[in-house]
Amino acid sequence: MAPVHHPVSKIQPTTAPVHHSVSKIQPATSRKPDHHFNEVPDITLTVRMSSNAKLLNHFYCTMLRSLTLYWSTSHLGNLLLILDKESKEDHKFAENLQKYQIKLGINISFIYEPLPKDKRVLTVARSQPRGYNRQLYSSFIMDKFISTPIVAWIDTDGKFTTPVTRDNIFKGNKLRVKGMDTFQYDWISRWSRFTEKMIGKHMPSDFMTYFPVYIWRDTITNCRNYILKHLNVSTIEEAYIRVGSTDYNIHMSPVNTIMTYAYYFEKERYDWHIDIRNVDLQKYNNLRLTPGHELTSPDLTPDFHVSLHDKYYTDANNAVNRQAYCAAVNNTVLNMEQNIKQMCEPFKTNIMWVLFEFCNKVKQEHLTTWCKNKNKHCISMIKEHYDKTRQLVNKGVYNLDLKKFKVVEEVANFHKIKCRSFL
Image (cartoon, rainbow, N blue to C red; front, top):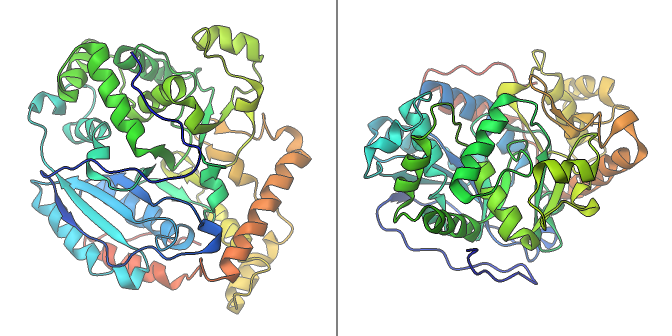
């Protein structure tokens, strides 16, 4: 039943599907060439959101401030915000934000997604509000709104903690994937149940443990088509409603459904980094994997994070933000003001172990597994990463300009949002 796809031997863009029912605002400028990002296809950093007050607070104070420092829309790809077409407030939000693109130094696209034809989509998961249901459903059709071959999927509460390099996204021509054994939490089994109903496969891992999630756009298309065949329905709305309405306790996780599809049907297109924690591999395979699709040792290779899930990460004193910024500017050609030099002094000998964490309110980290006893291999990975980011900073790919925060805060003020200090 698997759809036909062709393994990629080199990194090449594909043709985007045509979609005429959305309204678009195009970005201000196009991507710039740079040797470090040679042969990297265009990427769309994608956020599905609305002008809901909580989401706006996360977006401005967490995601956008960190993005202005650590994601280069000029060299990697634009930020795309998918909004509600019928919402006047969403349109106001986009029109206001668009005015600040040049000041922010980022390229932003906006797409207005119409309401689903079948409004039951909005209430199918009875434990969740209508807007949340809509955004989950939207995840299964986001490929229709995106023209680049790669989607970088992030939530409004995702916070970048380091400049993003090519090697954070790719290994060779394969997109990096991270996963983790978090099956001790009850909601993970509910996500797995939803995934099993949608594609007939249980989750091999929890893939909601890192941002951004990098996906070949046509993987989303292929997954949706597979769901339609598996459930014998004609639209993804039918599939979503059928599965969502069968079990009150079911929890929907599109990321896990799509990445589980990718694991079972397009595994060779991705580079897998699954932390099974301290469980024996054979035992884990027997428990979690379908025979013939077992994890192998190369699938367990350590990898680190370029972001935190801020909503689930406690950092009341902004120590992580300060250490992250100091690690990024350390030994670069940037001329730091005296107050920044003083701020960074305590972090000079620190190792950025935060790169091996994602959440600390719920345990999603690799410090007790891949990096147990703070081993030399993990230290070497961190050092190698900052050697690369230093080169990008010195070449001007990242300027780490804190003045952009004032611009973000000025835009946020339009919505009467006051962000707390970042550093």
